[in-house]
Structure formats: structure tokens, C-alpha cells
Image: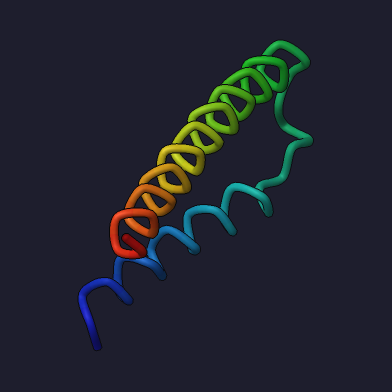
Length: 65
């Protein structure tokens, strides 16, 4: 098994654990804090996607020349 595959499964397992977590024990304040953190992670993830897309576009433009 490739090392990247092992890492990928760990990431997927972490995400699956997060989305399957029972939310009933959390207070309203804890849920609000959780949502704030997840919203920050969405912003961070979108920024990374944008950088990756820009990098890819730059590479494509370089190699088309």
C-alpha cells in the first residue's frame, strides 16, 4: 500500500467520524462553537482550492506556450 493511500484513509476516517458524531450531548453554545470552527475550515478549504486551481492554470499556461 502506498503511503499516500494510508494518509488518505486517515483523513477520510476523521471526516466520517466527525459527520457521524452524536450531537445530542452538545449544548447550544458548544454547537455554535462547532459551527464557527467548521465555517472557518470551509473558508480555509475554499482558499486552498482556489490556490490549487490558480497553480494548475499557471502550469497549464506555461506548458501550452
